[in-house]
Image (cartoon, rainbow, N blue to C red; front, side, top):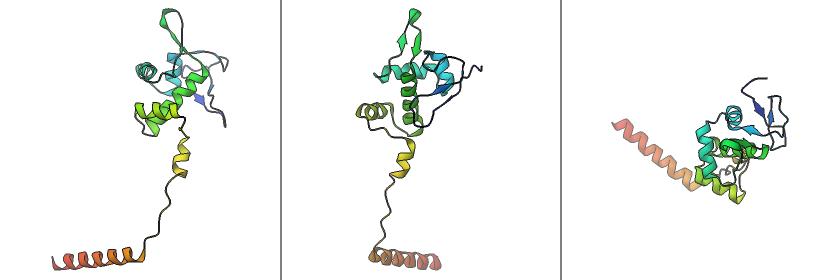
Length: 138
């Protein structure tokens, strides 16, 4: 199997599928997780300090082992910070409040456009005409 252990989220599941020959519920090392998610190890260690809910199992020699739910949490943090534009503090607050949503929900929740009133259109047309006159005189 490959060292990169690509993951793909199955439809409708927060779990990820690793293609590395291990059982799906096996513990993963920090190296396996960072390669699979494309996150650097020092960033992941820092996130452990910033997100109290992210607590991997630590064994002898202080080696970190991540459970499947830890990996799903890391992927959610990565999505919020790197794709949705949250700060670390904002991502932590959103996760603690339980208000995080998939990226597609942001597009669906876009505000609807309000039709301009006729007085606004008339005023804009007058401004446009004034600007056209000013350009013609210049």
